[in-house]
Length: 125
Image (cartoon, rainbow, N blue to C red; front, side, top):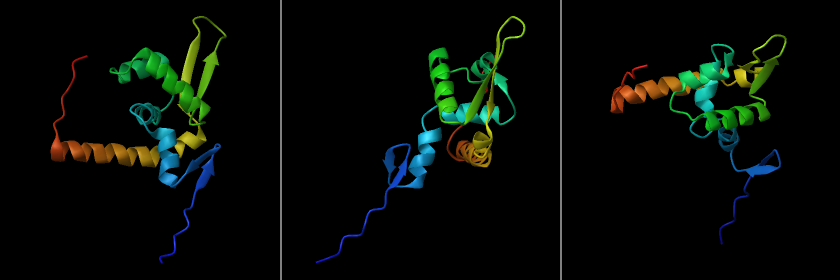
């Protein structure tokens, strides 16, 4: 009879994960989180700036994703109320900045994938 290998689990935020990759994907997985983060690597952005940069995202989705990224500690939301109109800026936190090399590598791999398997289309706008 074969001995069963012991399964190793990682507990994070009251959830169990079988692999640290799953934890990373909890933070940046999905269609939009990594896209938002990659645009914030260059510096803080206002909501409308992000929406223009990510033209295919809906306003509701952008808002929800920004809230989730802030909740996860990857971005900060700064509201300036000194003078109208109200100004809100989003920026990477130090924790979010630690993702910059990973996101940049993913983006570079995406460019490679396009040159190997796809085509780049310039959108008007």
